[in-house]
Length: 255
Image 1: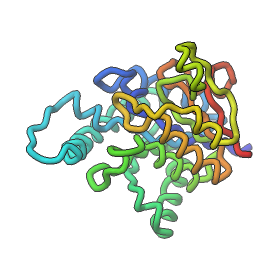
Image 2 (image 1 turned 120 degrees about the vertical axis):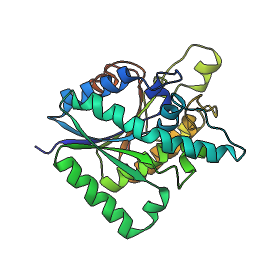
Image 3 (image 1 turned 45 degrees about the vertical axis):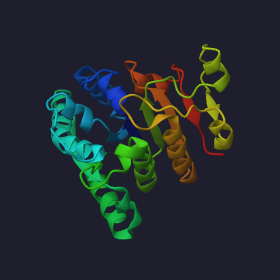
Image 4 (image 1 turned 90 degrees about the vertical axis):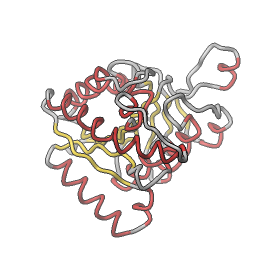
């Protein structure tokens, strides 16, 4: 049987466990789950966190635009982020490869074909592609979507079976439950227009996305006939528990 292909998107708040530094324990938790699931699933990871990784080591002097500082931090932090992934995954018998992409890559047929071919070869040879936006040449992720859109575009290009977005909530909560401070997860929905009425426009502390960008990502995935799950990546075993149906999370299915 062919393995199911999962595009796992990990946001900065998940990777830092809502602190000011990358959590090796969280990356180990992700690797441990992938190692347990690798006989039945193949994983492609889109990971934020380069800027958060850099902030552990440096404080840059600058007189320029804040966005340029963030780009510089991303350039410093990306190798550190990959090293942490590589070290933790290697101890679990997992191999990683870095792929830096920009949104403009998805606008050219030749670039898209190159991305598809490269990542397929990596996955076939048991390497886990770890994708991030090339922040030194592109500012989209820094300004707007915390890699949610990049994950959806990549998932659509690679025809994955599931887009799994790890965030810091148990999926999307109903607006009423947020107002009442008694949070209730929307378990399943196919009409994204109805879902848009429920979301908060607030953005997360480390990430730049918030739920708005996740809805936009789910729309891209849905148009490519891919289901999106929004899960709580702060919890241990969040991938396994979501796949086993024992966690609270939001499934956005294809109509």
